[in-house]
Length: 187
Image 1 (spheres, rainbow, N blue to C red):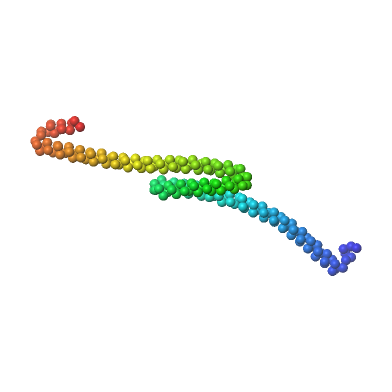
Image 2 (cartoon, helix red, strand yellow):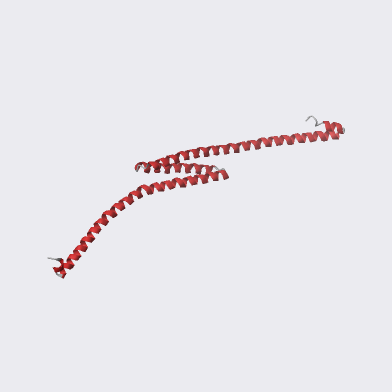
C-alpha cells in the first residue's frame, strides 16, 4: 500500500500527525537548548554581574577618594579627610566582595587584579596620610612662625619707640649733631 493509494482523509491525518511530531520534536529541542542557554546565562549573570558590580564599586570609590583628596587640599577640613578615609574603607570592602566571587568561581586573574588593587590602595592611603600629616605640620609651623614673627615685630616696634624717645630726648637736651649721629653707630 502506497501513500498515494490512501484515502484523502488518511493523508490529511498522516500529514497532521507528521506536523505534530515535527512540532513536538522542535519544541523538545527548543526546551532543552533554551533551558541550557538560560541556565548558562543565569550562571554568568550570577557570577559575572556581581563581579562587575563590585569592580565598578571599586572604581567609583577610587574616584570618590581622589575627589575627597582634592577637596582636602583645597579646604584642608577634617571632614574631607574623614570622607576620603571612609572611601578607602568602602573601596576595600568592595575588593573583599570581589575576592569572595573570585574564590567561589576560581577566577585567578580576578584575584590577582584585586590583590594589585588592594596593594596600590594601601600605598595610596599611606601616602595620603603622610600628606595630610605634612599639611597639618606645615599649618602648625606657619602658626608658630606668625606667632614668633609677631613677637619679633612687637619687640622691634618697642625698640624703635625707645630709640626715637632717646634720640628726641637727646635732641631736646641740646646734644650736638655729631653726638646724635654716634648714638646709633653701636647698633
